[in-house]
Length: 294
Image (cartoon, rainbow, N blue to C red; front, side, top):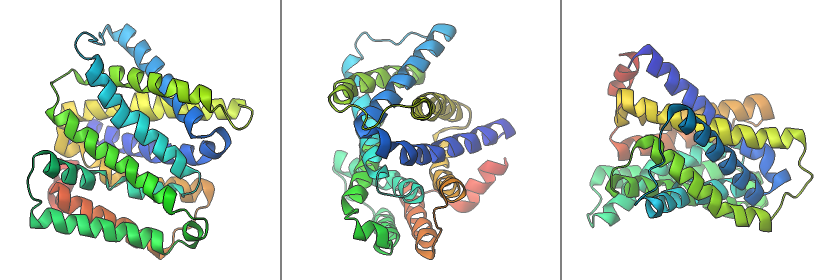
């Protein structure tokens, strides 16, 4: 991996890890519907500006249904579920549970193709599940506040990403930028009625607008551009390593800026979840490190 790609990988990981921090800061004050509706609208407007500057068409003809499906399953619904979870769960827990998305992707893929899971994937699934149990089961705050619904919501978001990855794999090929641009507008329009129906819980201060703008422009718009650039330059396998770095940054942001404790259950749960994810995706540590150094 080139030095430029490695820098992009770290930046993308830091941005996506930081998105959980911003959700944690804003979800309670704004509410999930208004927060995510604004995030998606900011992202869609930003990508439209980039499309105008780069003269990249959205390719709407014949792709409206495709954008709607991808936008709903890959952005609107998982973002909404994560925002609901962020009202209860810590930044660390949100980012670690979300790292189980490739595990759900493997399960959905097996169902999609009507195939049995192999032994390694099954063990990875069980290991990832055990990591979530460790992470949640020893967090007294989650248990005392009936946070199991927040955990299930976060797992639901990871499931959405697993469905979206399989859908994208089997859908007709569309330019990656057009996919991001079109699906972002589709998801923004989907959540617009919900955002109007459930407005912000508190007056929208400059700080809250800034948080929503950063979530949309940086954590969605710029992050998508970085991710697709990474895939283009280094391939999907190398880009997948972002899955393992996002929780690291999520824990760092949560601890450094919100003073969230890092207990043994957080560290162990994170290690077990990522180990299960590595087994499911077939990613090995030594080849991964070789790609990063290369």
